[in-house]
Image (cartoon, rainbow, N blue to C red; front, side):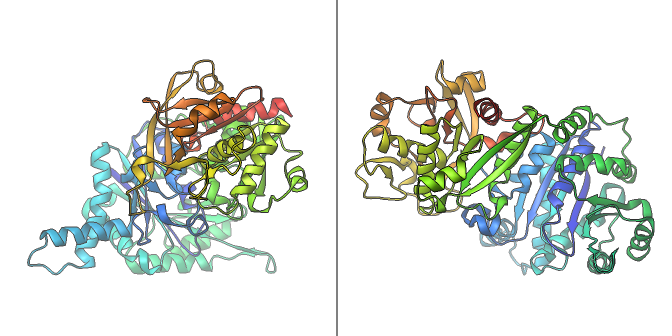
Length: 534
């Protein structure tokens, strides 16, 4: 079978859920036994989002091979239940960097390098290369941004050309658009969708299927109107309604026979899909028997997308523990005294301190660690959350007054957290942290060993700072257990304290490997302990 290419575009406004729609389509096609991979195109000029402020970009997702990517890569991995790579994310910066490098090497000698065909050819090669290197049946490529954005034009032109190169039988265009409900008029308005499709057709792309994002189901008349004015068969006007559980979206699409429509259009013959486990997960997610409240104590809480993978990992673990997840967002920058601590954390089941960069909010996080340790509240620290745990323990248990990280105080007399040795001479900021999968050896009889039920694990990292080896012995003598270490024993990966229901931190990011049908063990046991302890 020839590789099939599906392109997902968006119109009217951003943040409509193209990533979830793309992931859902990928899951549906995979359920038929097809080998499917997903790809995200980000039109920004940054080579990757690694140096971008979370308020600008949201979460930076890290793949197993160490690529810093858009958060939609996290959705892709969770829905497909598979690990992706740097090939699955394309940015304008990558494309132009590659073309300019080739020009300097002389690969275009005698030619004027232009957007068409050189930039568009480079884009197409990134799409087809993904298919070839992974031997996949279907590549689904999501084009970031909205139709009409200046920065997205070269990508849409490349997408248009793909049909000329590979034929209608091997390509498909799916367009996600907004159909707003105007309360004053008490009706849906289809004009934004009409204009969006018109813009797309002006580029030369006629969508095969429309996904209509709305608050509720469209009426037959509205679907007919969209079909007529957008030149799309009425059966290809698909409702993408708001739902409480995003993992229900694939089932809603299947209910409307979206999967069958795609298979028929691409000439793929398959038997019935296997969605039994997914359906059971959604059923459990919608009818839990208890509630667990977790405080997420961070510095970017005003933008929840900054913690997208953490939110989903907690959700997976809550469903597996037959519980409804309730999140309480705590701005660590506003935790200044015991009263604020008690008001914020007194009634929650568990406390999570996530990663982050920079000094703002760190002292609040350290106070939160102290509270969790003294009050026996289940605590999970991630990356900076582990570093704050070590700083807190050094200050309040080991007597190292003023202990800190050199990231926040380069003159501290107790630099218990310091730059990794390999980071000291690095000048470029982009893509130079400790990134991607690294092995971690677990100590026998530790909580970490109990959680993972094995002696060696691999998890994903994104950091420059580590526990300073000069202070390992002193911290350990006072009861801080480094239960996970790099195989050579030099890097501390997990820290925990005995005599506490659940007090553990990881230097890595276990949230990146959590899946709906396979919650990450650290999150599963954190939720389990939070339910048992309260």
